[in-house]
Image (cartoon, rainbow, N blue to C red; front, side, top):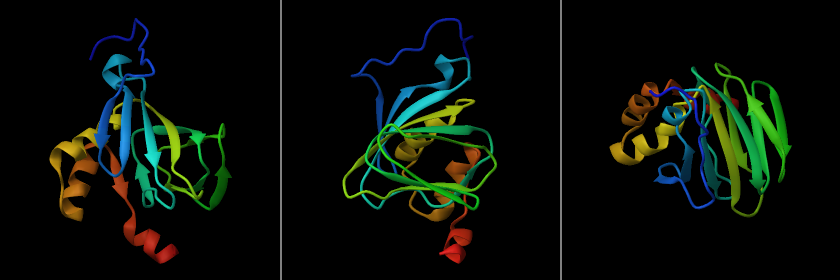
Length: 153
């Protein structure tokens, strides 16, 4: 990985599209920031979002670019609209969902970087079973807590 000594830039038409668990655009890669952080955009249909999960390696920053999103982190819940921001700590179960009636758009930054590679890895690997998805997720320090989410519902 190269040392982070020059700006990492993503112009408005840059980014690597990854169609895995929805539409994601990888804007800045960890390798371009010396591992400091990565950035992506998530385009999320109404009612959609990931199940309860834990990132073991990175904290996540979200900015709502459009739409309305609910964020659950431990026993806390908040809804944010356009311009709202939230930072979720590593190691803590969380999830988010587009609670609006239209497609929503999130900017997501992770620190340290690396997790932004998850969506291209899923797209490339084309996992078909939960075990295959979990295996790719484990490579990125991600655990899905599907059983806990079902009990909480």
